[in-house]
Image (cartoon, rainbow, N blue to C red; front, side, top):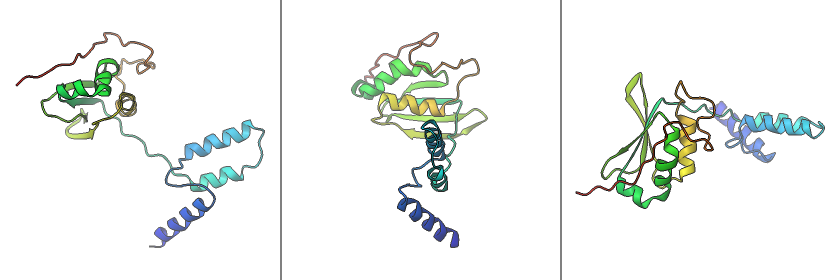
Length: 169
């Protein structure tokens, strides 16, 4: 109970000084320190206050395999999904696009060593760039991938395109 009270007091103290501990990452404090040094030094008291209020950013879990599951007819109506599948999905060798009638757009991440564990994210109405960033942060690069693999200015070797498919039934 004391730690909860101490945490609340710490949060109130940080907010009174203009810091929001729920949104302030320690990386931001490091950048602040660099900027103060670049500007000629000055007081590092602000950096110390920042460090007292920051939270370490949680590490994002990476997965080797992902599936983008969607209904082909949804792709016809959702320009961002279509753009992602056609132009950006080829940059992810570990990504498979699977069409399933009636499925809402979702990404499923899998672990090769534990195929029964699947992490699913609903990506309905996501922008194409947000899908790209989401997968860049969470999908491991293949072992033969070079550093610039997810660089949008380069076309991947063997690039493919996914055209809109329609299902009749």
